[in-house]
Length: 328
Image (cartoon, rainbow, N blue to C red; front, side, top):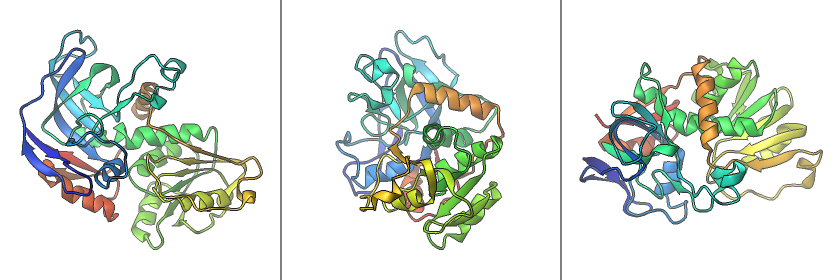
């Protein structure tokens, strides 16, 4: 099979021919139909994530068909469409796993980071951490739901019942959760990099009540702000726009250093919190929401061997919606 492999940080991915992996006990072998290109993949390539498995096949927004099942697999059968997310395995016995916080498990393994992922023709995954996906929709449309959608959903859940929601960084996750907010009749306010008129126009087309630069003030105070861009300076910027008692949620796995800010930005019982990964319960809840709503992803397709080009386009902000690799 073909695979795009990262040998070392800050190096381009390399196309390699590998044997098709065999499923172990409890695992399923998938032929990859599509794999989303996530900003986390950029953090991996840039060496901003600690202790990756090297060499590693990136990719954790995987949609595929079951080709073969390992021993003791009962959840899936050959031919079934399956989604593989970022969370690939947890211990199941630690204080976090037993308290419904498996996303915080210290022994967790992550797809495309500490185990091989979906930038390939085939991949294997633990059946317990996969999701059944519908057949009618194109695989490429489903792929971004498996991280961008899931992290967006968890970030929104952390914001509680916030009505007016600010979104900082209008990329893959933002364009999905924006549609959820519109469906739920909650106004959203989009903040982009200074001068990103295309991003602001995209947000308005998706129903934004307002769109502007990240340093601008929206027309009304926000109940909550979700930060998807990995820029630490957005934390005090978002706190300035959130009302007393409001919440700022940092939704990325990596963020640049947060600058010092005066206590009065946090005072007034504002809450600053982060989102770490996802749980399987998040995935099941979010996929139910998607099934009952008009949420649709906007994707730009790249062949597997153009993974480096897709990552570069993402880095340069040239992706409207989400980039997706299509091995076929």
